[in-house]
Length: 436
Ligand code: PLP
Image (cartoon, rainbow, N blue to C red; front, side, top):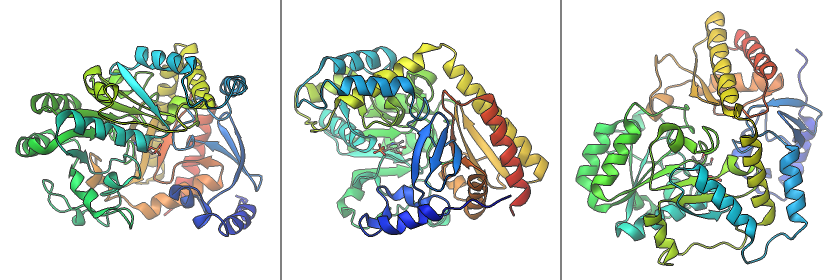
């Protein structure tokens, strides 16, 4: 195999580092292979870098590009609507159209507010939950990611599974220096997918709990689906103790269907967060919820604001994304079929090459890791995987033109084809033959 060159990206990274802290605009972008890469453009399932390398893209920009790069209908809508203005510090009819559409599609979306990204919409949900319940803390789960702001930036990177300690009173480690030490008092953290444990801890601590927040599927680590009855169990517990059930659908929103995971699993949370895939890479997110909770915002007891909220291009992108996804009733079935095909193909490749590659996931996303565990059920299990070997796998794929998220996560879009999946499996097999 002829080695790809990344020299121009390296030179640009050196130049960028003179003016951009660390050479990048988000910490995660540093950890590409073999270093941060500079891209020139993307189209459909392909993305191109400054060194002339082309990649079949399964990162989809960490999830948002559900209809691929540069979808013509999204671009057209953004262009047309932007010509009417960019931002009005006032309302515009298209915002109503978008809200009406989400209201139709998402089971819990009786009312909503738009924000810019997932991180701030999560914080808005906490504010609503605190205001309505008069309680302060939220319960969250190990291995789930809810953005980079202080009170959710704990317990994301853990040195070892042993360091986590007891299930019912885990240690949490700060992800960053400079976090407010008080932010650690905002939450209780538990392993995910253990309903009995949640029931026991909530029975003890419900008087301080305003919310339980969960990714409905643990997309950020291992792409782990909820155990049978787990989400329903959380619903019951929250109803029993006057606690808001918050689904963080930043990844699952539009990925599991236009109704998100709540539509897919038939469990309706009180509040939920949609971001990423709802607007094909344009910065818009939504906190949606049942009227009785969102009334905290209606009454202005809870303040939510933002100069840049619902700029014309972002609303246009969201409306066009929905239109594209709704156009063909088979879109999600096709994406799910491709997801299954990729999962099955990589599993066969693992068997054929004798590698301990572990593949799991659902719908149009999957996770690859190297582990000898027979199943990976929670964050503690994911910590036992061989990260260095995963790094070699991802690098091998990358050097052959397949781009996957560094933690082993693969996303499939509405524009991936059978041939794309065949190629990914063939290349994956080649890499598995080589790596140790
Ligand atoms: N919640 C989940 C489940 C996420 O995966 C992310 C980002 O990856 C966030 C929240 C934060 O969203 P954003 O990066 O848009 O702030």
